[in-house]
Length: 493
Image (cartoon, rainbow, N blue to C red):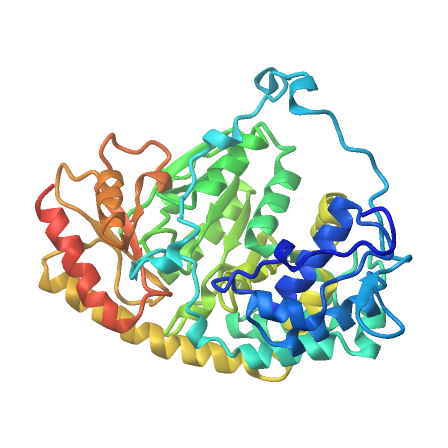
């Protein structure tokens, strides 16, 4: 391929008809990869649309559109008479290949790293969960409930000329004011929270907010951080990373018990509206008691209200933040649970001095969440699509909840958590001697996915009989059969 008469044979091209990408996109990627990786000389001719269409068994129009798109990007040039060739202006790789694997020196990273995050206790979810007919796993969405056209329209508005010029700027540590305003005026008032824009920080999901909040409070290493047991496993892991002294406080049938708090408590991490993983809602007297304890012992509370939009069986209880008169509550919310998990947008609500510090820490980590996602979400809220999605989701989830409860009851499977709140999952208690980890492995081979309970406990029993079953992504028609397969396996263990 050294001279301008050189051409590329159609045999170098192929199409994956099982790919999720369009034929045109596949062809464009194939040509760009060929030019960049193989450094094909300028002037090298591409196959004619006729010959390539015959080889790939696709439309000539598809190939013409792909070629024309690459001309607009300066990868190809249209020849005077007919056909296309690699352009003189085509981008080129400007670096030499690195060392061969045999020339590289091996480093023992175990001696360089002082933290073993790979060994942390965490919830494992198969990446191919959609291929399983009975996915009772938490945190995944049912795309059939989502108004994709509405989201695309909001993204189109966010990418409009006026908005895009703003989105393309470096915001440094500033958040999208449109999104913050809607959180202040629509989202937080639903939870009884009155907040100013200066008291809100947009984060990469509630997880990011949790890490920032705990890290900022970790300076006080003389007092204990208290968290729920069982509870969200990443709370304990973040506390370990920040080297805070910590206490796992066992919950009861009312959730977190303030009477059990140590006198040297400095921080409390709770999920009062919908406890992870049981679903227990902390009653009002306990909430008042916790706030009173916070004043008496002078500690801070991180309130993770990750699933506040899922209260469809009973009205939601007032948040701790709405009852807070001392400014002790750091409130965390998430759009990743209510819109879709891959969005990774959440927010933190706290007194202005704390938010200033949190904004500075976030800027050091990632500057700010992507502006285009913030603005698209803002339009999604502003135009009413979000509220419509919440109503639709609640209706569908209630049907799935009621059916799952009924099916579990028919098979005498015990539900350990309450049935009065809603949410998107149930906490199951298996019989004595059941190992939910082994049970999940057997069920996975039968197309059923459940979540073993041991990651939620700070010190789980050798055989943890608890497990979680979610219904956010499974269809109503598949619930009975999935429960039946679960019951069969539970009876044989």
